[in-house]
View 1 (tube, helix red, strand yellow):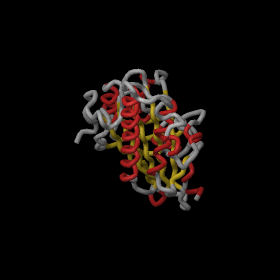
View 2 (cartoon, helix red, strand yellow):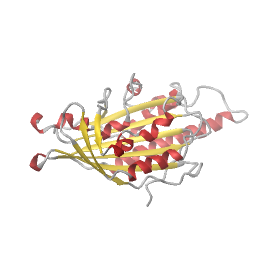
View 3 (tube, helix red, strand yellow):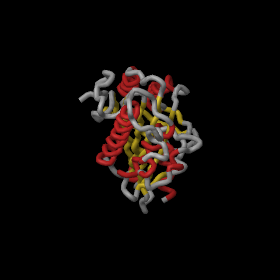
View 4 (tube, helix red, strand yellow):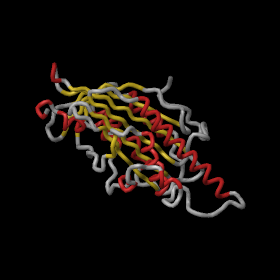
Length: 277
């Protein structure tokens, strides 16, 4: 199956999206709703690690590693929120994280964004990331992934990471999924160190986010119909959405939002070096 789904606008009109951008409250409520599908040992990380500078070889792989296919959209969003969950294991070498990022724009993101992402993936089957801080290089193997049939268009890339050599080799996996749903771009990355990607949890999160967006779309239409009751805007803290999370919503509005591309960064291994175990 292709790693990019149908890019026809409205291809899956019942699975997220809408005729307008989301508000800040709506993006916050949508991500807060993710808490209902997260297992209890996954907790919000209020200060996820920022991506550290790195050199990528060959240089042609920089568009994939740095997600430069998203750069044309920078500075044009009207609402954006991000949240990172992390597992709480008692083993230093076993750790997973999941970052969900929602960004809404005045107009729907162009389908060409997904073509650019796929071009970046296909041009880079393997690469090496050398951290600027002098840490050990990380080896990446890149493969296409089957995107979910959600939203108007979707794309997936899988990466296998390795650091060290011989019996001291540490391995990890990263999966990044982009979904275009109306005016909103959903960017979800899952990192798994020394354990497999939890595909079931990843699917539940994606389905919950797109389902919540679809509900907001329907609510928006209902409120705009003649005779509809007024009241709080969909996603406003006074609406039922405010009762979803069992985590504090304030954790979803960091001053500096971490880029989902941090999961591609060699710095993910920083707390798992063999000499620190």
